Amino acid sequence: MQMICSCSFLYVLRRKNVISFSEAAHGLDESRLFVSYNNLVKTSPLAAAYLVYLIATMASIRGVSVPMYTTLRRTTVVFTMVVEYILTRQKYTRYIVGSVAVIVVGAFIAGARDLSFDAYGYGIVLMANLTTAVYLATIARVGKTCGLNSFGLMWCNGILCGPFLLLWSYVQGDLKVAMSFPDLLSPGFLTVLLLSSMLAFCLNYSVFLNTRLNSALTQTICGNLKDVFTIGFGWILFGGLPFDLLNVIGQGLGFVGSGLYAYYKVMGK
Image (cartoon, rainbow, N blue to C red; front, side):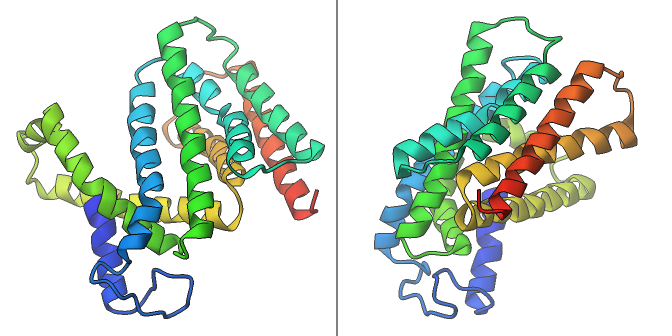
């Protein structure tokens, strides 16, 4: 549904010439699909990386407890640095590496009370970290070589991934389960589903734009910084979360590390 919603938005906006899919501000695309076959081929690695990332991250949620999941997911920054170096030979200064180290240390302090080891669960989460890093690095790399802007990349990703995801859902039986949901046609459920899909469109655009304009590592850091606000607002709005000094210290270090990274990037270090 998110893919359908995203492609529908992009189709209408492009048809009305509100947006363009190419780097040229108002360039006319030759294909009826708005992008050439050549560009679809160039963006196919991005679609493949997205599909693997999607499957791995969904599977990883069930593998470990929430505190340990959050802890391990924050080590994605390390995976991102390694993948960026492998794909683009991107190197970072000691200031940036130090900021990342502060974030990782904070993550492990936050999850220190939940160190029950589960080899399978940990392995799935670390695999999700790797696929996330590859996905973000692929956005940055493909975006620089295909001549498409963030809207164009999202369009190609939706066109390539949508049919596969629909077929996958059918084969796995998820589509049948969804169609038998008793409140499927309920106005309230449809409204929430539509709003969720619209938010997903905004989120995906933000990820594509931030990754292309900055870097895969910057996007990963932003994801970690988001967690701090998510936890804070969740505690304020919903409560029920017991006070844990180690968790607070860990979250604080993650916030400080993210702030240091932003500062050093702005200062050119």
